[in-house]
Amino acid sequence: MSSIDHPFLADPRKKLLIDGQWVDAQSGRSFESRNPATGALLATIAEGDAADIDRAVAAARRAFESGPWPRFTPAERQAVLLRLADLLEARGESFARLDTLDMGAPIRRTRGAIGLLTGVLRYFAGLARAIEGSTPQPSMPDMFVATVKEPVGVCGAVIPWNGPLWASVLKVGPVLATGCTLVLKPAEDASLSPLMFGELCLEAGVPPGVINIVPGFGGTAGAALAAHLDVDKMSFTGSDATGRKIVQASAGNLKRLSLELGGKSPHIIFADADIAAAAPAAAIAAFGNSGQVCSAGTRLFVERAIAEEFAAEVARAAAAMRIGNGIEEDTDLGPLVSARQLARVVGYLDSAREEGAAAVCGGKQLTGDPWDAGFFVPPTVLTDVGDDMKVVREEVFGPVLSVLPFDTMEEVIGRANATPFGLGAGVWTREIGKAHAMGKALRAGSVWVNCYNTLDPAVPAGGYKASGYGREYGPNHLEEHLQTKSLWIRTA
Ligand code: ADP
Image (cartoon, rainbow, N blue to C red; front, side, top):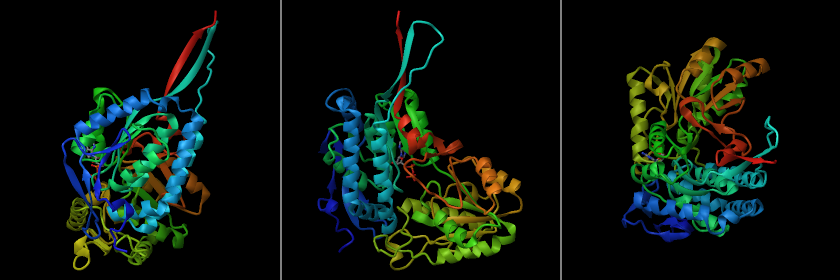
């Protein structure tokens, strides 16, 4: 089977989904989508801009206020979500292949995500029927008060390219559960599975205008959505630099914001840890998805007594990872998503070298045949690094890990927290007291002890500090899509 042989690509001209219809961009413009492993052209995608965003927001507003959607009962919204989950499960392999072709992640990874994503939809299907207010008791006579939960309204979402289906599901699930409507702007580097997910929504019985999908570029379509005065809530997953722009753009109507931004997550290995388990976990934490993960464990703090041995173990695990085209079953690490990302990662490798870091493995872009057709960087373990080096402070978003020896728990807590970010943190120890102390001291939205990057539909995930506002997954995620109205009724 040729790598671009995919049913969704049989017609390689892709359109925008607005008001239940597949339409061209008003400008008539389009952009190309290419496979980052081979450079092959996959599709030509209608390029939405501010005019198309306007049209999509108007459709989302109409669908929110009139038509069938506002009359859907919780049970009907639940049924839609359950149908969507069943359809996603049935087409899981097709989605996995499409994401792999479009953004390069290994097929075992994209396939492995399907179970979590169907779980997310089923979890939100459950919550759709559990939305309830309360009846507070004011200290005054003759007054009945009820809090009523209402959908926040028209939502906008801008998503990244590192998990396109993943992000689409996380944005669509709570919107459908709460009765909101959505305009979703996929990343220009990975729009295909969001579009195919749009097809699935229509097939699942989502009414026209409830889910609109407008691919296009960040500075045009994305910025127009973030600034739109008729969008009630904006959800963004991506870099902190773009997150800051979204915050500014939101000021026009002070729309509600959820932001899931970057990280520079500490992964801390105490000398008493189960080293045989921790070393491969540290490699996956840093190199999974070629490091293109917001919560990648990129600052590996290792207790000094075992630091050298542990770095060698991680380098061995890295060396065992097979790099290649993600569509091949045995690939562990695919390409970076784009030439731009490649240039960015290579820039960080250069700066690390200039600042005196040593690469235990990796350290340079792979070149020659077949690497030149794509954007490949091998897993890189850096030693001789200091906390103040650029590669240690900034998010690289590539397969680059820095090993940082430490001596005491107090010291490592201070160093781990000395970052503007706070998305995730990992700790490996067999001592229960240490596990609790670290769990309390680390300032991050998720702290994983003797595991890393575990996710579940029921468990909130999100950022402290500059890693974002709000939480995804869990009941908090639903709450972000709800308004609370206090209804006061004088009873006498
Ligand atoms: P990267 O630079 O790695 O692509 P970004 O955070 O810039 O990461 O991209 C994530 C998403 O943000 C993409 O969908 C992109 O189109 C979008 N985006 C980029 N710039 C803006 C902007 N100014 N306003 C809104 N969205 C943007």
